[in-house]
Image (cartoon, rainbow, N blue to C red; front, side, top):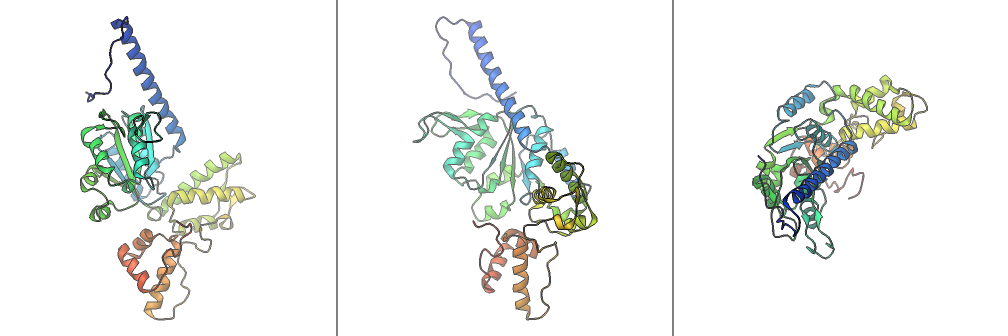
Length: 366
């Protein structure tokens, strides 16, 4: 049965007999369950209900088979994959198709959150826990009790918060900030990261015991460039949805558009594909998309890195190629290093040796 915790201590009011008190408790619990199920319904409609396995590539079929195999497990799941590859959509699918589907699905992106804000969002706080805590607040874990919690970018969780999350996974209890009593909680954790957590463990930025706990069931979501054969089906899906949103007839992409879409490297993965197509539908005068309607984050790129010159020393060629890759990957060191087949530390060393400025190719400033 469900593990019981010391949530509340109730004193029977004078004049209130057992049956009346029972009715009050039953109404309170019913309202709580109704509120959580309402939250689950809202969360399902907020996140796009997209099939995370749209396509026929071996990579996506492999992911689907593994995800279905662990669907009914209570073990924590770690979704690994690049930004925009569909980790959030997969997490939502696992909740909607699992045994907790009628309960709450709540998600939190941990990237850039301070320790104080992260603790308050996850665990809630007691009244007076800090200056602005004028009222007690329920945290995400408390609201999602019996449901699913999805923590995106779990590698960014503050080191001081990590043991508290481990306690939730190990003992199924947590404590509000500023409180003195533990609360029992029953959640399934799905977490995601585009970073290599084992590297963070070696850098002592992520606890090893928490790593092995959240990594009980690892699922790798492939980047779009590893499943280019799925692009036509994805294009059809996104064009159909965009045309419906715009109140237009069926929009189709011609061969020139499809060829360019399949040649592009997609550093932003499925999210970038969706955005490119939505923009193309908006700017196209007719329901016939050509390559001219497609605008990428760097419009000079069609997926293949141009060879601007075949002259010069090996050092000059290597420097030029690193520059091109950085520009093509939007300045991302992680994606550029992976594409070059070298560790990030080696890429940093080469950039220093070749005097390539940090931030080369970056689209948005930090």
